[in-house]
Image 1 (cartoon, rainbow over the protein chains, first blue to last red):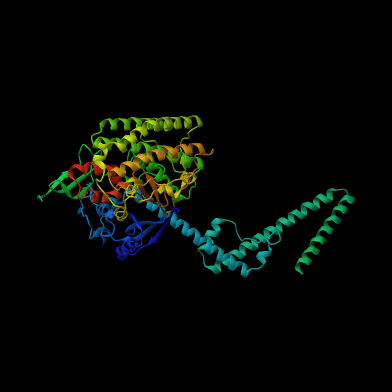
Image 2: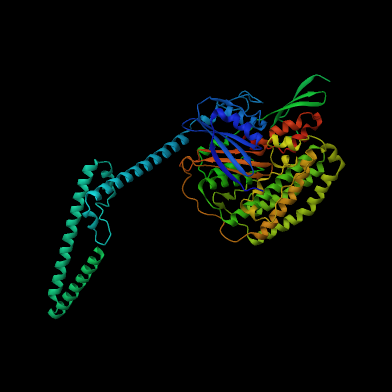
Amino acid sequence: MARFSQEFTPLAADAIHEDAAARKADGWRYVQTLAVNTEDGIDLIYSYMRDGLLENRIVKALPPHATVPSVTDEFLAAFVFENEIHDLFGISFEGLAIDFGGNFYRVAQPEPMTIISPELKAAREKAAKLAAAKAAKAERAEKAGEAQAEFLAAHPEAKAAGTGAGKVLKPSDDEAVEAKLAGMDPEKVARVRAAIAAKAKKAAEAEQAAKDAELEAKLAAMDPEKAAKVRAAMEAKAARAAAAGAKEGE
Amino acid sequence: MGKATVIPFGPQHPVLPEPLHLDLVVEDEKVIEAIPQIGFVHRGLEKLVETRDYNQFIYVAERICGICAMGHSLGYAETVESLMGVEVPKRAQYLRVIWHELSRIHSHLLWLGLAADAFGFESMFMHCWRLRERVLDIFEKTTGGRVILSVVKVGGVVRDIDDAQMAEVIATLDGIVDDYTKIMNTLLTDASVKNRTVDVGYISHDEALALSMVGPFARASAVGYDVRSFGRGAYGDLSDFQPITDDGGDCFARVKVRCLEVLQSIEIVKELAAKIPVGDIEVAVKGAPAAGAQASNVLEQPRGECYYYARGNGTKNLERMRMRTPTSQNLAGMTKALAGCDLADVNMIILTIDPCISCTER
């Protein structure tokens, strides 16, 4: 026996009957028809199965009270679903083999499945907000990336201003600033980033100077002989680092 | 040839456990055409998915029908798991199938009892339901419920069956087999049963295929389709599974297929109980189905293939949940089987599709 698999494929409204007839001829088994009430209209899904493949064919966004051809002349079993969809969703089927004329289900109000309940409305609004927030975040990230690339192209020194080899100096890690920059004029963004980089460079220099001063103070407090040894060791280390840098440069 | 007359049948009728109406067009004692009508117990349960989150809705799903409760909760959970890409632990898959097959046993025993009652074999009805009570006792011991089990959740099951309980389940089933075999042999050999069922409500193999019939109704017309043979979940670990079919195509063949399926389900439960692995019985499921994500699923309910469809909208509430039950798929076959039958056989034919109207209307 074949393994189970499923597919969702699109289907045009005017091809519903043609598709059903072709599938019957090809030995597909009719499984069901269902409707989904969406914001864009009513989706119809026709399901057929053959050799373990469950294929769901989706007719997208039919307008309210649309009429589509019935498939009951090909698959009589569909009369239950087509009558049900007519009563609950308001879609009409032309050529229905057993047509109950809207009396299949006894419902308190017509087309109850097309009523947008407060819960569904809230769920859809929440989903729309989440989708909008996600899209805006993606757009901001894209803009920030572009601005970063422009900035680095215009200011190659920013790349080397990091503390370690190969580390890129980022103008700012602050997300709020990034978000602000994403919405600004690119030229202005480049100027702001340059200012931020300059500020960061100045801060790094000041920090280095403070460290040097602290070290000098420590050495001054030491035994002069030991201090001379420490100075020699530091100079040798700096020379080795410079030699390694020069080698890398070659 | 007499004049054509329309006889209303149901929705309240001694043979029908649920409301189903038929307009029977008869000439003399022959039924020329049967037009079914439902709509007396539509509850709009699918609409409730908008007000219950996907974890809560499982309790609505299993209340669609008392007989198919386990199957609906399982089918719903599998569909949502497929929608969210959740992999259920192996032990949970085994436990689900064990309870589901026990449900099939109790559903078929219930149906055999109703069928026996329909052709006037009332003592057989009592014997079948007596055995069914023992299956319900298993449910009560292992889940705490007899009809609504509430053991399936999205991501696994909520209860385990320990080794001692499993041994008790097997012992109970072994005890049932002896009694059940006697009942089955009587049903399949008794002349009075055959008088009411052989050559009644015949559906050929080709007609069964053309009418898209499912379940034992189709398998009694030699259609070898059973969702269990796809080997999903614990069914994939069975040493051998072959759908039970019969080429009789009549009411007797449908009785026979269901009778043999009870024994088959007992064997499945025993095999899985012997093979069940140790491990977790659930995984944590977090988040919500993505907006626009959709999944479909099929499950072999006692009455046949049931189709499930779910679509997410990015929140905990699903945008749409749909169950297409086996009876709704078999109504077209039933009208075909009724055309040309004797008026006195109508109740027998309706019963042999094992209609479940609560499932159909939801």
